[in-house]
Image (cartoon, rainbow, N blue to C red; front, side, top):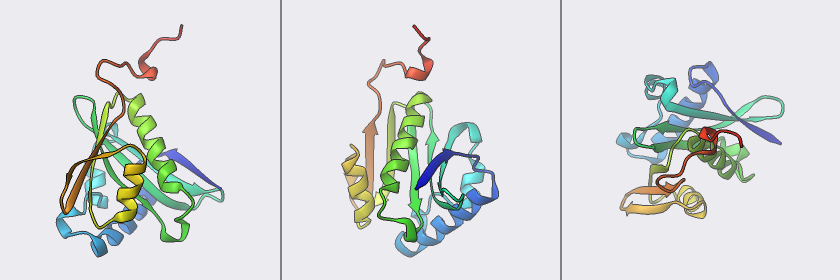
Amino acid sequence: MYQITRESARQRIARSLTEALDNWHRRIYPVEMAQLTPQRLEAIPESDLIFMIIRTLSGAAVGCGAVMLRLAGEGEVKHIWIDPEHRGHGLGERLLSQLERQARQEGCRRLMLTTVSRQHGAVTLYLRNGYRFIDDGPKAVMEKTLMAEGTVPAAFCPPS
């Protein structure tokens, strides 16, 4: 069993997870595609970032993901990473769902992301969860609409 929680990106475990993610990406992405290095993560104001960690029930951190909130109701998924020993349990899908839910609650209407086409597992995950290609060149740019224009997030609606 696993739990996914929103946590501060400034804690030591967040740095460890993003270092592992950065090392993983250095093996598969061109250098210019490395997007969530510990230094870049720490440069994003916490108010503009949704950072979530996946932990085992014993508390070990085994994955992370982030959404950087942008102006005008847009956000950018800044990688989802699961420790290779914990893949195959649907954690990427659960984490993506949690990130989307939180982004929607914070007024985000559309999410975008960039991956590389040869990352078949990641592309499949995103397609299966409603993302569509904007550009499917070597750098695959994808998007998903979370809320129709003019929709008010449930978190902003007063109780009836």
